[in-house]
Length: 103
Image (cartoon, rainbow, N blue to C red; front, side, top):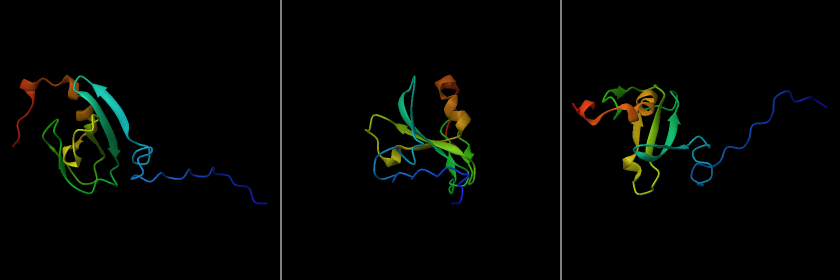
């Protein structure tokens, strides 16, 4: 009988089933600005250019980042925002008067 050296991969959950989030990678984070659902986006999965609300710079195609939306369930798909990981992690340190404006 052949020996199996690698452990078997677990089955990936269906992202539409509501169990475990998108492959179980979504996390719930809280901060001074409320509760958020945060999903990491790998560089391979980043197929569009987005504008980060934290720094107002573009997130180019192929750059890993995060997508965040309010956890209260009141928002829609259009309320999701793509952030640079560093901008997301530092959002609580920004003062509103120092926040860059839209160009």
